[in-house]
Length: 317
Ligand SMILES: [Cu+2]
Image (cartoon, rainbow, N blue to C red; front, side, top):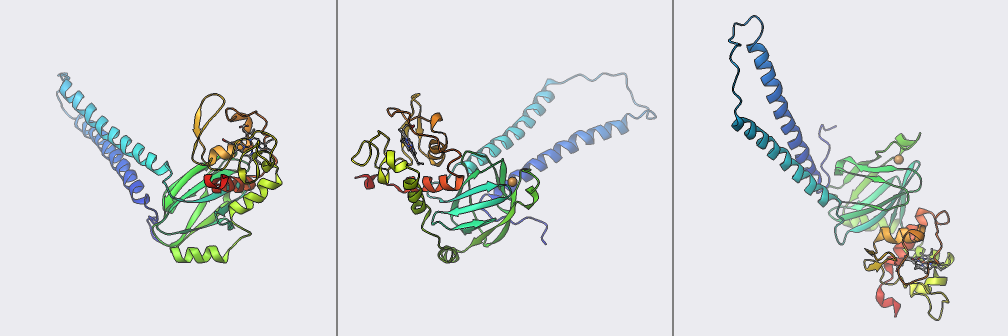
């Protein structure tokens, strides 16, 4: 067993350097403060004959110098940390998306091809992976120490976390948020494989259709198609009697809400439209879409999201 935790992602080394810089800066200040305390306690001890009558004149130059020096050091550390944080949590373009649903007490993982796994996550090495995380019950926290990543997993919304693994191997996956009596059992593993091995793994675990195909079945079965038209072409068409917005081409495009706010239709937006439509009414349509909260599980919702994402604008024609 090695002392240092493996640095198995592209962001791990920089996180470690930042941590090291914080520890070194803290140690330097600790030594300075306690060192001076000890030196003066010794120098001016009761039995030592020292001239104690003279009161030292305060020099502003010294005061200003040390205040600015420490401020510069800590402000520098803050800027570095803030910049790293932004880079760590901004989802990269073109990442492979994998859905994660936490529940008491397990991790359920779904790949875009429909492959599912429990308490294990298979990913290819050297590719940016974006995890879309949500919870079915309480707050969990998805943490992979070897990648130096963690993120809270909240019920009712999608959180995004990305990483790029750099070394094939098997790494621990933990729930980092006390989530009930079975919390300690909410562990798993991340298996990082070469691209070819990953393709083989996907093929060997082939599912009943891709996520989008499974989503299409749910789209028909739950009556979405009754309003939004089959293939999400939009309502008020030959196949639909109510006005409902077309869903083809929705993903990634701007939507104007009734309050005038313009939002980009990302995974989280589509998720919320299905579970809490009363909170996000689209402008210029009647507010008739029912909430599917309590009817559709998070597993179902992510399939519907995958289906809506797969509807490219040209399929609308
Ligand atoms: Cu948990």
